[in-house]
Length: 134
Image (cartoon, rainbow, N blue to C red):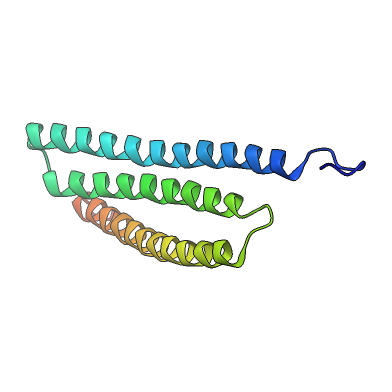
């Protein structure tokens, strides 16, 4: 039952948010899937060409990690949106648990990405020949 001042009923808002949650979850899954396919293709082509495999492998892992972090952010956004309309204590508890797990995953992925990036930069600096000082 709608109150005279309401624009949308609660059930309509829940339906719209439910649809948005599915869209955002799908976007997150698509981002992760795209990253996995992209990383596999890069891995296969690098292995086939037999170029500097270790350096390329680290770059592939770094890029895949970025896709995973972005996909997890979308999944977390969907979870937050799911509890936006009159959440129960159970839903809040589930969101807290899921958010904690995803935040920990995100933290370690971000830390690993930073570590991989610094290793790649270090390797690139070491591989660059230095000209003698004049």
